[in-house]
Image (cartoon, rainbow, N blue to C red; front, side):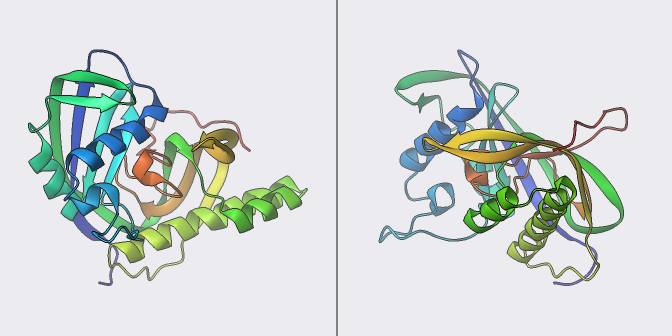
Length: 235
């Protein structure tokens, strides 16, 4: 598909338990749903033979505002809608907790290039660096060059996202990473370099969609910045 944008359905399934959750428990949330609904490949990205499915996750698990969220995109939106009401308790780590409240929000979203840049913030750490550009980032001593590298990665994330949804970007994308700051984080017990803060790009990203690595576990969750919201310090 070509043109300025592509549209798809987004469904947010929100669950409130007897206690608040922390962001790191998004991995446990994903593990519970992947096991409880093992036939649903979109929840765990494993084929029946055990091999991995390498595709942008259509269902993403997040903890936002201390509440569990399942974000379903395109075909994932239909699955998340079906799951709503089917879960009355969930196992988070070693703890099984009843669902006290479950809500569903459905909307139609656009994804694609825009005439003007849009300001976003990362609600969860963005892991934009892979093994190769992680080394490049640390080898660069000039802060402006580091920022330029991060901006190229942001643009690359947007282009990859467009490809995943069958959209061909025809305009030049530019990003501004001046509002991002470095934030060390851990994934599967390994310390990794991530970023938090604000950025700008001439590309429309639906709220609560993830970019970068490990988006199915809640990393890299974006939200559009309100007009009165101030940017963060730069990296």
